[in-house]
Length: 149
Image 1 (cartoon, rainbow, N blue to C red):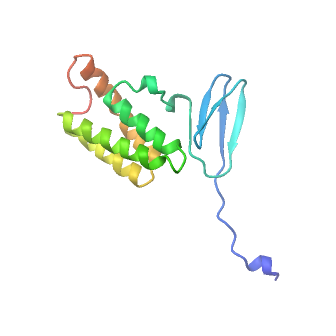
Image 2: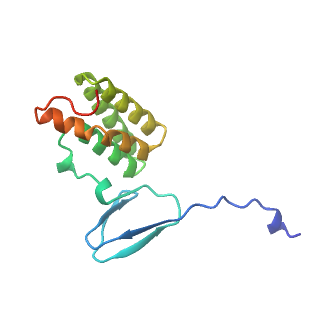
Image 3: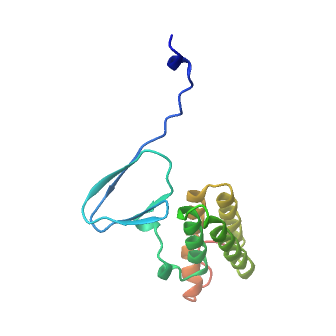
């Protein structure tokens, strides 16, 4: 038995293959990518990334829930030095929203999203905040509260 046989082996990282079309966008570790042609991208190690409809532009952050989403997105894909600023922004926006809404469900979703964010579960935080988009749209359109009650 050689010394190499007794050394611990690193855990295998999963590989993720993404099929992207011309014009698709992707953000990887803070770098914005735009694909000019169809491409297959293989992510072989840990990376902070979003692609396609997951990416929210600053202009699209036009409702309270979308502003929280945008701040969480920025915290997720930003460089380490910038992350605390965006975490604080996400917390503050979520707290403002929770104080302003009459929806108990919205407050619960916001609290869960911030807990996920602080635990490093950014995907779950983003997914939770997305559930509030129809509610915001309904309230801002003057139709009263949407799905969250």
